[in-house]
Length: 439
Image (cartoon, rainbow, N blue to C red):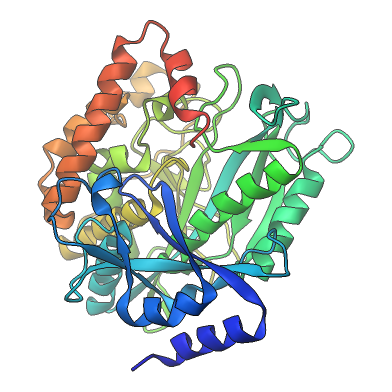
């Protein structure tokens, strides 16, 4: 028996001249994959799934040899507005299942669903809003990306110096048509660097929105002769691009983050849990060797610390209007798989609540100019991918909350990447060759 959402999706397809349907999912590294089907196959897909050759998907190989199937989640249906309206295209995010209906353990979206379920069982709802930075680069006459940035504007500049204004506008309008709610957009510090911020959403919706956003940026930039890059540090001399993750926690419909200098003890323990386990999960928040070139400069953190409002900290409590108080984690970047990243952040916070962890004293320092004496008591984030992988490999917390096969495959693949980066005579050149076209 099809759900009402599934019946609504079928009706939409019939009434809106939809011809192609993208069944979208991510591999364990957050790389977007899809299978396209004709519109008349949607009902079959909703009822029985579409078969997937999992052995050819990075990170899925070596899993159980049973066939896997993509089942569209009808609540995620969205038209792709940049595609032609005639014979249009819609997209569904999919659950990956075995033939008997069991969830595929390496489906990272399922891993986030488990974290959300745990949160609900403990009586909480977690909402997440992302602030995502990216660069726009020019393309050459063959449509290939170059390393020439689109403009020379700086923070909050306006047109004509800011040449990204119309692209950001087009991105935001397209996202609104997809049911995604940008909060604001502007030019960032770096030349050619842009940011779009999103309103908070339930954790699964926030991860889906981030995947959709990255697709929209790349597609709309390409239509306009540009290349959108989410590489954390595409240019050695320019600011890096981060993914700031705003998290708030609700209990009985009330936001437990109070804002200002007031703290709810549960919110304090939630933050303390993330601080405790941040080193264990950094390789999932910052998954490339290139990610670590961003740490410690241009307001990107390198110490494990927190404070109110201070942007030099790993976690800050921003000023906010009543009911919108939250914590902001400033270390992640958009190369991450948001499903795994958000799942582990939720688990870390919930562990803090279960362990009744005390929040350490705030660090109200400019950590980029602080003396060694002032920072002597602060622990560092992992300083490279190799160190971050070691932290995850030795973490009972990570092993507790991620499927063993997923974790083994993730760490093995990332270790190969790190070994290759270390062996390269010029690491940044290696990173551009291997990541620039894909991140």
